[in-house]
Every structure is written in structure tokens, then in C-alpha cells.
Image 1 (cartoon, rainbow over the protein chains, first blue to last red):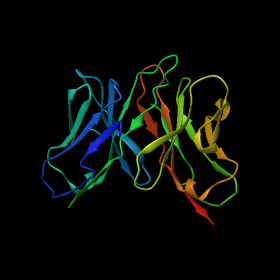
Image 2: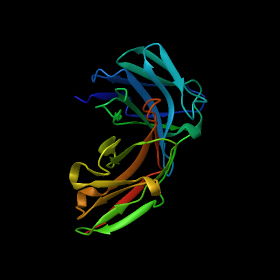
Image 3: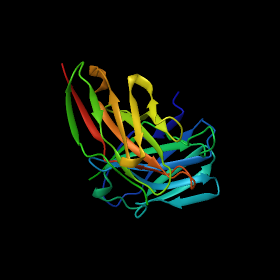
Image 4: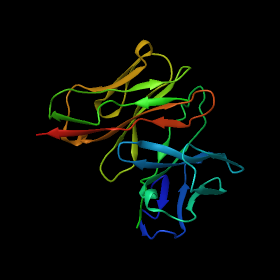
Length: 116
Length: 114
């Protein structure tokens, strides 16, 4: 089984619908992230959480919200989906940087969302 | 704020030929630098990383990268490309002291000709 699991893997929805993307991890990491990938733009950070009680906005948080239900679970919600939120979404986890740990990210396989 | 530029959107290389992917970053302090690879339909896999020490870093799948502070670059190289190296490659820079929020470049898509 994957260390970082995203559900659903693919979703097609309509404008105005509420969508939730879920992420769970078995790596025991405290830090979790949501990124979106668009062609030519790479990955951009939506939200991140350094522990269960910590939620922070990334560079493109408008139109999104998150919930950190437990150390292992971090969900991303689109309250009212719009077509320009069509993208590939990635969840990632990490340990904090330190002497031995460079804080690399470990990614899920992605959730492809299409908003019609 | 940090930023990453990957000047080449697409690169086509013949199998067996060498490959070099360019990455330039902007960051005020010593950066954490990463190269990730994304195969079609897959998530991102770490190829290699740099945070201190030897500026020539070895990674998986025969890749290496060289950190050049004077040029703010972290270019990725492979001496002999295999067909399985066809993928999209992302360079990323991480804020060292504040945490590991990575900023990614736009990616370079590599096509391998037989």
C-alpha cells in the first residue's frame, strides 16, 4: 500500500458543487501539504499544516479550505467548484528539516479534478 | 520569497545521449534544492537533493546535479539516457530555516527518441 493515499483519484463535477479531496498517510509525518499542478506552472502550494492544530495558507488558497482531522489525515475542500479549479491535486507529507532530514516531500499519486 | 526557473519547457534527446536540465533559483540564504521526476500518470519521485556539503550530488537512476552558488543554479545531468527516462522533471527550492515549503519550477518535459 502507498504511504500517502489520495481519494478520489479522478473526479468530474459541475460548477457550483462542493468537492472534498482526502489524503491519508502512514509515514508518521507531522507536516502535510496540498499542491495543485497545472501545465507549465509546476506545482503551487494551496495549504499546509505543520501539526494537527496548525493550518496555513499557501500561495493560492482562495476558493479552497482544508481540515486536519488527525495527524494522518488532511482533506482539501472546494466549497463551490469553478472550471479554473480543474487541475491535478497532490497531497504531500514531510518531517521538519534538521541535521539529517532535509525535509523532502513525499507525494501521493494525485487526484485529477475536472470542473465542467 | 524564493522562486525557481526551468528555462526549457521541452527537451528531446536520443536514447544513449547525454541529458542536462537547467534550473535557476532565487533565494536569500543557503537553499535546500531538490529534483523530482513525474512519470506519466504518476506522482512525484525524488531524484536527488542538496542542502550542504559536496556540491555535486548523486541521485537515483544514474542522475546527478551540481549546485553552483555563484550562478544560482542546480542543473541535473545524466550521461546516457534510457527510454524510461521520458518524464517531466521538476526542480524545487525549500526555505531552509522556516520549514520545507517547496517552491517548484514549471517543469521540463523530456522526450526520448529511439
